[in-house]
Image (tube, rainbow, N blue to C red):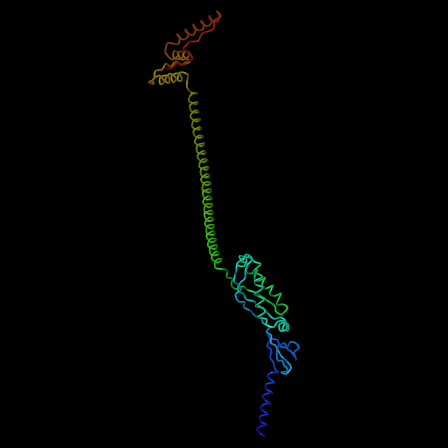
Length: 334
């Protein structure tokens, strides 16, 4: 009898412990408990300690933290009929715990399928070059379309990131050739720009050198002209001084000295090796001067002058004009 009582007590303690363990739930700060009582929604509980009836209540634990879902590689066809393989990641967060339990049975599976169909729809509206270059635009389009579907499930799609885009091998080879050609073009453009800059700098240097040379030549010409002007002024001043000195000396000379100097000049002209006949223009005046210089010739000169005056008077009286000597006033040289 005692053994039966002990067995009953042990069974009661086990059932009590099991019941207590099933009726006590602990929800963390980032968790919520969706409670169903007799199959009907009884609300959301948590965080903290939650007491439930293990006979009538059922619970679903919902995580409110931001989570991610990896979408495996999906093959899509672009607008220009190029097949391309893309895999991406979806980041989402539960905003309504009750809707996330009531509106969708398996959010992960549903999100995976809706992401695959949405990806094909987005890529089908884009060309291959846009898919490869406009990654941010494709991410934003995927996020908006997925969020429109998951919003009714109480889930917010916070971000979509495309991880890898794999075009077909033929397209990859063409892209490699294009990249090589583009780099060759950039190198050629850079080299041409370098040559252009060097030519511009060289031309600028030559222009500056030509300007400096012209300025130097101009200054040299100005200095040379200034020197010639100063020299001409000095020569003119020398000539002027010499002429002044000659004039002063000439003013002190008598006519006989000037006549002797004139005779000496005629002698020097006649002593040249060429055959010359020098006839002074003032031959009569010269002879009169010589007669005046020679002794005893004064009377003869006066008599000759008197005869000349009488002859001229006679000519005037007879109406004839005086005739000049054929040798007077001319110089003949052969």
